[in-house]
Length: 191
Image 1 (cartoon, helix red, strand yellow):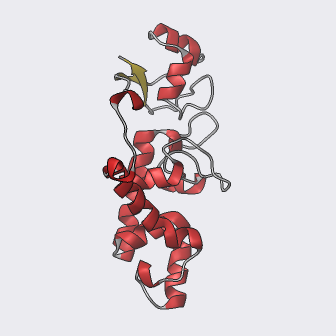
Image 2 (image 1 turned 60 degrees about the horizontal axis):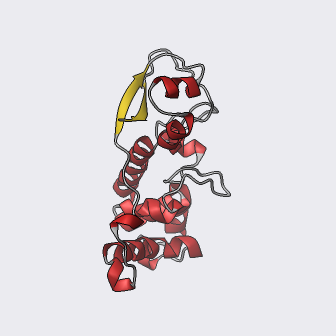
Image 3 (image 1 turned 180 degrees about the vertical axis):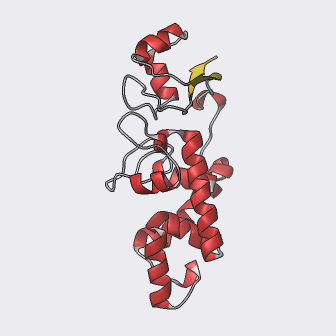
């Protein structure tokens, strides 16, 4: 399922026409149901670690409900309620036997195609060298328990700039951070 995020967003923090956001394309209501904070200051759907955990939680619950990883993937794409209705109407419970909309009927195959291509890039004519790849940015985690009135100043005080802070923490949606009592945020900063 690590290729699912690639199928969903191309590994970019994009917004879909249905307002699903982040690498995992999570809609606001699902994000909240999965325990993510979603508001105008913090949107954890953009947090790669937290949104990945939320997507895994959703997929695990869907697998438990439907008994199949392919149906779990289909439910991720179209929603559990809609998939349940289709299964009930069509009286079959196999992804491969269901008549689904074009996007969902191709979804598992898209994920598998991406996996095949990325794991066998040269076989499919893709030749990448080290210079073609992004180097990971070594990071440290800074716990934040109090409001930050100016994230640009915070970044400078911590040896970086606002641009790098935002690249590493796209879940910060404003130039400040308000921290709810008892909450601790983990901000990534370059080492």
